[in-house]
Image (cartoon, rainbow, N blue to C red; front, side, top):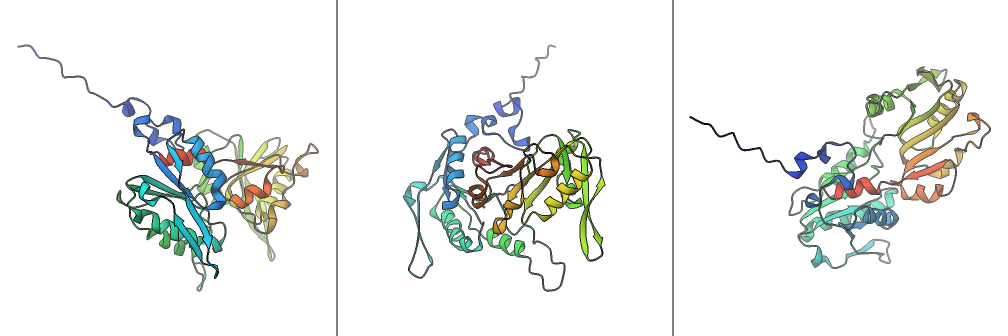
Length: 320
């Protein structure tokens, strides 16, 4: 009796290639054309520049939606989605910027309205979650504003395709020696660099009387170009203290990377560039993303700042 060999197992183009969904940062070019969504992207006015970059990164699969952003005489928003009938059954997205509490209400109005326009699916892209540092109640009476905003966003109406997808950016990998301004940053991010074997320096805050000062807990910065990594910067006090400690420890140069540069009250002016006189002079580089549009404008053309665009990863996220 003869036996025929079993038929060869057929695999899809996606399974034969490296699965693009298993990577930490999806690149639009890695998504098979047959798997890409055609997306209509609406945006808040401060995010127009980033929205245009996302369209370019989408290589024809993303188009901008049109909206009217006006105000009535009493200051309340007067909003209108242009050509609302044309977006029915389409994959739509909204690129928001909650950089100021005064602009959240008008954007939430749009975010709640778009899924109800019979769109096929809806994605909310909020690069920076502004109240993310106040998510815990440590003292009776604390109001966890991050939880409040999360509940508001959790009630975004579903579209025809189901619940809203939410895209929020945290941290992205960089290169060379890594320093963390505190143990919390180390816990959040060191796994991003662990596999690559980058040397690490961990700083910590200790009490000195009534003050809290930054010291090196682990690692040797001497003779190294050290990059301080954190998720966001506000006034920048901790980063500046960390810079001073690393310089005192012998670092040849110090740079910084934060995903979200908030910088209230022009606090970015505290950060000076190193112009060749040594690490104590300032920062060699200060990388941040364009998640906070007001900061992008403030630091444009100003050393040591360099802005890394989120356009490509957002474009990729909108096409999955």
